[in-house]
Image (tube, rainbow, N blue to C red; front, side, top):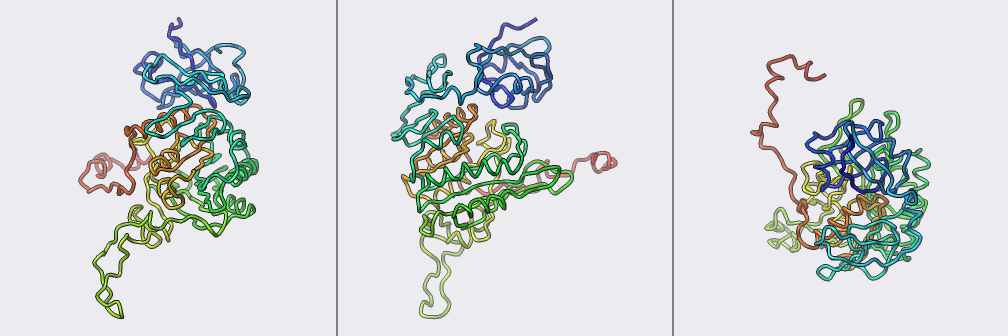
Length: 444
């Protein structure tokens, strides 16, 4: 027996995102994640409500609209119309201005002919003086430009020499759900093409901050920052810092030490780059300290605007010169958590925005994900451009941008210290079973 519940949605890279309003009807009180079937084949629903199946990946192209229904054994999907079974990139032949509609009416959608699919948001909107464009290609005259498109297809529409900062975290090519795994050399060639387009868009006094992890193949780790260094050097850029972003939580490895850091490569296009020291100064540890000898005897030795972060950056708990930034990654209990599997914390980008751009400058993120870089730019009165090929992420990015402007976005405050347990909490004490029973049983 097939349920009468039908929901129209779009195919992504091997999954369908079940909307929150349909979760009760299509999932019910099932504990997630769980195993199920889709069109009679094996499938699973992850904890974010995404229905994964090889059936989707092999049968439907990305961007296909389907109707989903629940059966006694699992789920059934059928295409809405045969003419829609082609990719989003094939749909986007012309950019046309959509009609802006009131978001308060949940049954109303904006139709954007460039997508050839229904958009849940107006493509053009203004909030508190900030103009937002959500479309396919670049469009001048906006404070925030957000695109759902192939990265190279979009970047080729962006003018030369307009961005002061390129900041991004590209797909790491390590088998995350939203990635298609490719050979390392092929991946690096693709990334080089993206970087070349970014450098065309970057101003002569601009910076690039490329945040990357490791490529893992058959248990062997390939540090991507080494490979990317060669790409940027070949293209004539200068490395200013190799910043280590350290975090305390993540997946646990079994055959090697668990990874707990990623790298931000900060390159500049020239020697005349933007660097705002006063914007990132931190409070002095000993503001009352005075000179004990010499002509300045008895006078304060500290800078009145605060400490130079190139010595110690208290906001990040370590210092800029040692290049270790201790910022928590976005996990399940983080206030910024969304469905994205490897989300940028806003405060990580905020510090780069403050240090490497001026107010009114443009920040570009070619792999924008759920929009943390765009939000960081907004919070610091900068303009921004972002693109991502995954519609579920750009929709989330758009919503978070709106929430940010309306003051309802949940975020971790810039400079908030990492939580340190006092030692009295239950979670920091060894469980009784470890004491009363053979610990080898639990180690298994």
